Length: 404
Image (cartoon, rainbow, N blue to C red):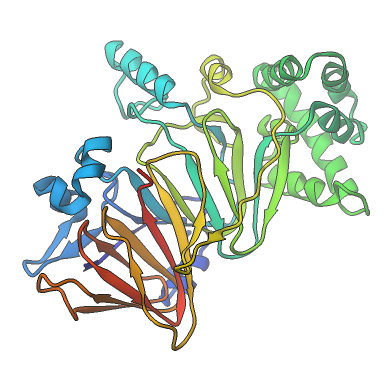
């Protein structure tokens, strides 16, 4: 088992304090948005097996079956198929959607054939993989996830009493839901930027007013007003009003599958995803928005957010169940003095200590018996496939591995 040295990504939307507080380090004054744990080529974790720090991606490449296990390599190839993160949002991320696997493969092949540089600003597909993801809240966490019921969205927009928005309300009432949502989103994203900026300003002022009143949508209006303050005049503010507003409590999670529009707004969470950089943006960003391709990928139709809560088994492992194989996230809440919990060892795993202390003790008979690794809050470890380990606390530990 290896202690991981991880990279913090300083994206502009990140919190300046949340990740330093988790790690017990001094804030730098700059945003610290994501702490990456894994073997993604953009910022692989580093390990030291006695010859100095080396990228985890290089360790895996040197012996894929030994590090990941033959089952995982046979299913996903010779690479770690997931990326684990701590995500700290102090302002809204871009409104976005991810392709399914077939769409990603086709889109990547098309851009490669057309010679679009992989680092081009207008490139949609950085790789040929899909990007399902799961976010689990460590603090109260706000986000947007999936389209509202069309009639509900119409009522929310109508209450703004903004004249240029009234045609959207009529469309949402008059059309079959999937057509209505598509038509309104298309109209918002293709509107004249100067004209719709004024509409966004009016809508933001109305949302501010409605958010200050009592009512079932007051928290959502406050969220939309906050988004507008961060992205004044951005059409994505109107697009965001078509989506469900979700407030997660610590320990609750959201699964984001292909085609589901979403955005994270505020809070600290543990995120796990398939190893991919494929993002198509709908708004709340200065980056490229490919409207025709976006509309091809988005899954139109209302969808309840589906807040996940972990399900505990007899071993004490609490699992967040998702419908994909690339990753499996679970949690151990370990009390003082409880017996160590043996961890399954068929495939590689990453363990993150989210609070308290975690103690990993080798239990195998291959020379690792009795070896111990202590993780403080915010620290993480990589455990290769086949290495028998028992986990004890007191602390809360997230375990990331594959489901297949």
